[in-house]
Amino acid sequence: MRRLFQFHGGVHLKEHKKDAMSQPVQAARMPKQLVLPLQQHIGAPAEAIVTAGDKVSKGQLIARPGSAISAPVHASSSGTVAAISEHPVSHPSHLNAPCIIIDTDGEDRWCTDRHPVANYHELPPEKIREHIRDAGIVGMGGAGFPAHIKLNPDDHVVDTLILNGAECEPYITCDEMLLRERALEVIAGLRIMRYALQAKRCIIGIENNKAVAFHVLQEQVRNTGADFIEVIQVPTVYPTGGEKQLIRVLTGKEVPAGGLPLDIGVVCHNVGTAYAVYRAIELAEPLISRYVTIAGSVAHARNLEVLIGTPVIDLIEECGGNRNTLSRVILGGPMMGTALHNVTAPVTKTTNCILVNSTVGDVPLPSRDKHAMPCIRCGNCAIACPIDLLPQQLYWYARAKDFDKVQDYHLFDCIECGCCDYVCPSQIPLVHYFRYAKTEIWAQQHEKTLADIARERHQFREQRLERDKREKQERHKKKRAALKPAGNAASKEDEAKKAAIQAAMDRAKTKRESNGIEPKNTQSLTAEQQQKINEADARRAELKNSPTNKQDVQRDLLQDNNP
Ligand code: SF4
Ligand code: SF4
Image (cartoon, rainbow, N blue to C red; front, side, top):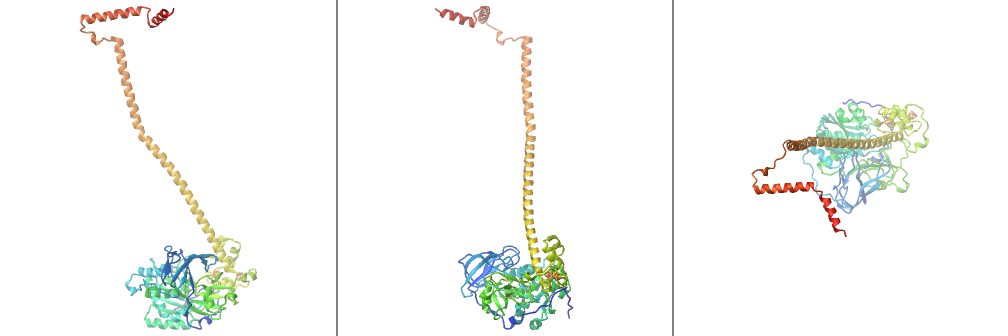
């Protein structure tokens, strides 16, 4: 008998589950159009690899992962790509998002290149994770984290793999129906996941208000002889289905604040994810459908197996809802779900419930804003908080926009379970304030990150320019230094030459002055030559002594020519 532990706080809620479980799960009607958002998971959006007009088959890859943390998207049925465009989706921002829209042809024709894994034990765990990645499987409990990443233990030893079948929110019954109807397949998926993680043991946690599913599971586990799997009933307290709470209840271990279950040797997956893993490995079917609960103000609340991309309004109408009387539709449960602003938005991989016109008084509604009264500091919210936070303090600081203080009170540990909202006698929409504060802080961090990037880029540019300038100066300096010795040598050489010439000239002058110049051809002259020289010397002497220099001759000529 396994010992169970308790977590702090929690609340008991009315279940509202019976209606939707009154009939077996059936396949939903084929919609005329499938709307497949490129972002159905945590991480980067997928990137479309088809274009408008392309014919696609069921299961065909139509968008590949956008990064390492991402998931591919596959066509949920055969047809023609009508468009890749913005379309309403379920998102708190109420903004549209890029989607691949397929006009279905009604043939539901599978693509042919599917390859089931005959015996997964023969493949290394990383190959199994690759198959799971290629099948586009993400956490189907609502978080939407790519499953192959969560199935990678890295360097950790995984002691316990927990399969979360707690499903603690009111109205939602899709996991319970899956366990009732597909227990064997879920167990098969769990075994594959255990192999991928190399986990020592497995626990399937299921709330004790799900007796049928519990017994079916127990029997199937017994039949498979998997003695490493335990099926454990946990108390029906909201939010036992929270990952940290279920780990605490089943193992007594606390996931450290800001840490991961893997840090304490535990990995937790949803039962729907295990079923998807089974289909991916054993049947080579990517994640193109899931169980969805349609509950609330519809004539026939039930669970349907729905093709991903089916418009929400189609399912509401299939269950007897009337589009003209819709006032409020929530995707997910009443405590943690998201209000839908446009019912043409599609079911995605993480949609577990469509709650129509929820008017029950035991769940928080946005209309409570109108009736909110001042906080009376009763402390009920702190008593109910499963994370042991102080919601009233968080509320005060979030309201005062003191975003530093709100973080001091561990705002980001809040799982937005809504327990504090639920018990608040002043009907203060506490979670709205927490979501607002988180969004503001993220926006500020985003702006700060952008500013930091811009500043770093500017500083880098300044440093680069400074470095270039320094390097240029260095280069010039080196060049000058390289040129200087050659210049000196040249000038020294010139000076030496000049000095040599000057010295030669000086020597010649000195020689001339001291010795006179003796013409070399004055030796051995013939008498006739000597005679001519003498005559020339006589004429030169005569000319020298005569007034008839050049000017005198010219003057004489001028005088002769005048009349
Ligand atoms: S439960 Fe409401 S009224 Fe009471 S302390 Fe918390 S916020 Fe204030
Ligand atoms: S919503 Fe946050 S603060 Fe409120 S009870 Fe849940 S975890 Fe605590």
